[in-house]
Amino acid sequence: LAIQVLGLITGVLVTRWLGPDGRGNLAAVVSWAAMLTSLGNFGLPVAFTYAAAKRPDSRRQLIGNGAIAAVFQWLLLGFFGWFLLPHLLVKHGPAIVHMAVLYLWMFVPLKLFTVYANAIQQGFGNYARYNTVRISVPLGYLASLLVLWAYYGISVQTVVVANILSNILAMALSVSLILDAIARHQIDGPTSWARLSGLRASLRYGLSAQIGTD
Image 1 (cartoon, rainbow, N blue to C red):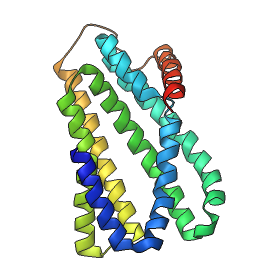
Image 2 (cartoon, helix red, strand yellow; image 1 turned 180 degrees about the horizontal axis):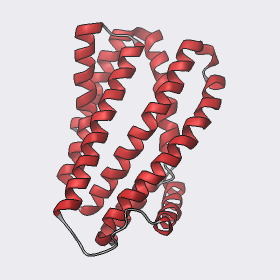
Image 3 (cartoon, helix red, strand yellow; image 1 turned 45 degrees about the horizontal axis):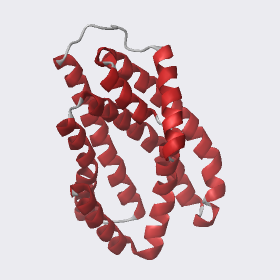
Image 4 (cartoon, helix red, strand yellow; image 1 turned 30 degrees about the vertical axis):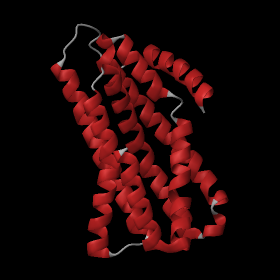
């Protein structure tokens, strides 16, 4: 409920500040990155939540596997968007195309690291921490918008910067909380920080879950 209310507030503010044309350009910048990240995570958030709940002793490996997956997906989605977005957004002009590509390269790793770390947190059953990370995104976005509006005014560029700042906050919070959770609950199990066979199993599970939901 809090996330929906905050989303309503920021949505109304941004729309009033930018007007129809600016709001349309903002949507062109952020919407494709959000969609590509959602489709390109291959269902791994669900898979990591399931694996963390089923095998608590694999927590450390899940963190490493998530980091490996996020880096490869970042490169894959970044280069894919680099070629795709100039064709999709050609009517918006070169400035918006450039901003959209730059935003994609910045947004994807922030979002993936946040989502994967928080999915593992959910699997642990730490719902207070899980929801703290979730609400930090709209809260950080609103706070960043107000600060930027007060000091620099509002434009498509400043709204995009506010979006990135909120995702930096969420990533830092989610990663710090999950590492703290692992340190507090030492469980005998694999000591390595990554295992490719485990990542392959998560990919198989995640892809089947994603096909069933998306």
